[in-house]
Image 1 (cartoon, rainbow, N blue to C red):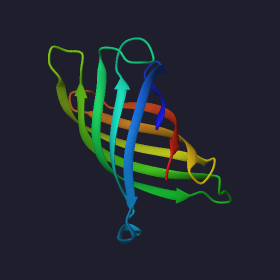
Image 2: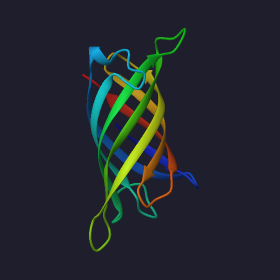
Image 3: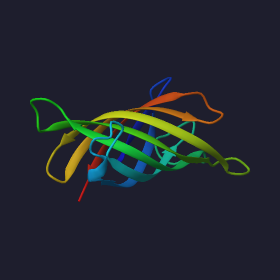
Length: 144
């Protein structure tokens, strides 16, 4: 998913590039937390200015569980929840800072075709040593 984050406070636009892989498991269908196990890598511009890369980047590797659900009376839009955890590495210092992170996301998927969609996501994230923060992300995905 390539898209933009709007970090709060201030609604500052930041680059956010994510690539992930997930697989839905039939034996998890009745699990209320999720039925799709995911792995993802994210790069986020953590600098004080600009949309693209600055010296202060944030790289995350995360595993998670996602639950997709349909919305009544529509086949074009569906929703999802996503619980994830992993390691975030902050660059731009004299050494790389690695921190444990956790994220909770709620989102909507607008299905453009069988393979293409636009994702709109609200995330609540916690990195050790950093207070909880929220981001709103919008991105395009291609699934096969």
